[in-house]
Every structure is written in structure tokens, then in C-alpha cells.
Length: 547
Image (cartoon, rainbow, N blue to C red; front, side):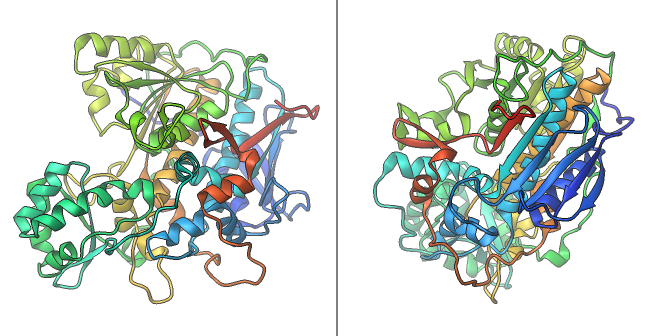
């Protein structure tokens, strides 16, 4: 069987009232419209200053919805700038430059808007499975704290001196012909081959690998000046050709004016899985916690985007089991540790079970297929084609698991700028115009060293799983979704440049990650000394009791 076009989006026939005009509610309305909702706009509600969504028609008797607030804590936050200051985003975005710097894109508000749409989708799914009508609440501060959660976990587990940018300059680089560009590799041998081929000093090459490799976790990347000098003496074409030969991606920074605005027809590239309808979804479990109680997610992911998507589904109540290689995910042992586990890894994977399977062997692949067939969602972020090589593609599992929702949390999602280019956050920021979007005041364009597209891409991948589950609940058939970091970049471009970077009286003091954890204790749980994120939503049945 092959995946097929869907006859109607998952929430066709549903209508919502979107009250207010702040960025969070505008994003939520756009995501719900893509799910098939008719969206009616209304004036702002005093009880929900960042926006409000009310279900008008559909499961739950039209009584479910979501309130959007700037902060659920007593901390008096009034807008995106306040949130970035109080929750660590401004600190982290400016860390490589030695001081706080506000993001000129409303990243926290965009994340909150997608999370609010997820909350509504999850509430509808709960009602379709016989659960109670639910009302959710999402705070923009909660979305920001989710975005910085791995940094918070690191900072609170270590509780030492915060990282400093150190000596050296972060990328991007500039070629002799004046082009600014980013490079990427996750392989130390490729790094060495690349710089040796270009004639960089050996000491600089060796010194530069550690900060380059760790920049995703530290938000700083002080590279020796000799590396920039080496590339500054060469044309971009030479650097690109060398990168292609050595396994290093080289991507120029594209201005917003050169980035196409059109995206896929469905933000999640949602399709039917084909084949006969499967069994219905199990009823909602009153003994569970969250609207996805009673559903199972099988996750095979690494790094940030995929694990964050799985974490969100777990926090919504799903039973999630990770497929890891023999010996476990190598990220488990990366210091600092919290309770014997990497704090950063724990921030993205707490609450999940794990099995260790060798997918290079027939037995490991059979066990993985058995596990996937036992679930309702299969979530993975392997490179394109690998699921099929493992026998875990939609066609491979259609007979055994006809209702399975397949979610591929991809990077480029078919929009690669060239063959063999790694699909990582900073390259997507460079190619997708985000480096241009976050650069203001005449500063040269540069990606933020906060993983903006990884985080938002993970939230979007979780949204794709909910879209697929809604489709299954309403049609009985499975679904196939594919999202990418490019979709996160596209959504940030759609939201456009905000005003958080513009000075305003009364902004709270800029907090670092550990200070943010102290200021918002309700957003975290403590494990082994590390602050790990709680769910960014709250849900309550309409009787007012917590779910």
C-alpha cells in the first residue's frame, strides 16, 4: 500500500472562536485553520491577555478551548520582551556576544501559539475517545521555559559559574568573495579532513572542535581566529567543493528576500496511510493523566527535535517508549549528570521508557517492528529512507498496524539546499532566512546560537502526531506525517519580526537559565539537583478539577 491524500483535514466541520490579536492567538488560529477548523475572530478577552480559543462546534459540546496568558506565575509579565528577559531567552541569545540580547522574532509567542493549538486538538481527541470536555491554559512564559529547558537542566545540575563565550569568534564565516556562510559536521574526522584540506593550522583545528561540537548545548562557539582567517582567504566555491569532498556541509546565509514563502499544502505533509481501516483508538483512561492517556508512542529519535516531540506527547499523557541502540543513547552520559543521567538528556526524555535494540540485525528490526505495531504513533527522526530500510515504513507495517500514525521529524523535508547537507538547526537558520530575521541594527546576519528551529520543529512534530491521531479517530485509518526544521523556519518567517528587541521601560531584569528556574519553580520538577520541565499546558474538565 502507499500513502494517499486525505479527503478532509482532521478537524473539518469544527469551528473555533479566536479572541484577541496577539501573536500567540494568531499563530494558534492559523494552526487550527490548517487542521480544518473554521476560525471566527473576536475581541480580546480580559481573562486571557495573550488570546483565547473557544470551541464553537465539535466534540465536547462546544465547551472546550484554551486560554493564553503571558505568565501563569505571579511574575508580572506583559509581552514577549518581558518573557524573553525573565525566562532566559535574552540571556542565551546574547551569550556568544558577551551580554543579553533580545530576539527580534517572537519565538516564545510562536511556540505558545502552536502549543495552544495542540491543546485544543488534544482536547478534541480526548472527547472523541469518550473523555471529558476539557479547557486548557498555556502561558507564553511556559513556552519559553520549555524552549530553554535543556540549558536550565545543565545550569541547575552544575550550579557552578555560568559558561562564558571565551576567547574567539563564533561563526558564521566570510569568504574572500564576501559571502557569509555556515558550516556543519557532526563527525570529528570530517572536521579534521576539511580543515587540513584547506590548510588551516593544526592547533587551531584541534582547539576549535570542542566548542564547535558543543555549541548546540552551550549557546556559545568561540573558534580560533585562524579558522576564520583560513576561510576568509578562499572563494566560497572552493570551500563548498572541499566540504562536499570531506563530508562537511557549507550553506550561505540567505536574506529573507531570497527565501520562498510557499510551503506544503499541509503544514505536516499529512497523508492517509492507505489500506483498510484499523481498530478504533482505545477509550480515554480516567485513571491516566492528560488527554492522551491510554495511547502509546514508540519513539526512535536523538538530539533535540525528535526527543522534544516525544516529550510533549508524554506530557500530554501518552505512554512513550524509546528505541535506543545497544548500550543506550550516548547522550545519556554527557555531563553534567542528574541522578546518574545527563541533565540535558533528562530534560528531553523524562517520563519515557526505553528498550535497546540493534537495528543493524534482523532480530533487532523484527523486535522494533513488533514494538511499533503495538503503538498508536511511531515517531522517528532518522534520515529519509532509513525507516524503510529498517522495515518500519508505512508500507512495511500497513498490514500489521493499519491504524498506526507515522511521524517523521525531518530536517530539510525535501527542501535541501544541496546534496549531503546536514539538516541541523544552524544550517536551517542560515538557509531559511532566520539568520537575517534575527539580525537587527545593522549587525551582519548570523544565526542565533539558541536552537530556535530545533525547539519549534519538535513542537510542530508533536502537533503532527496529534493531527494524525485525530485523522485516525475520525476515519479509522492510519496516517503519515513528515515535518522538518524548515517548517519551523517557515513559521517564524510567517510571524515576522517582532518588537522584543526594542527598548521599553519596565522590562524585568534579564535572567540566566538557573535564575529562570528559581523564578518559575512551578514550571519545573527537580531530579538529582536538575530542574526538568513540567508540561507547558494545564488541562481541567469543565467541572473545574485538575486533570
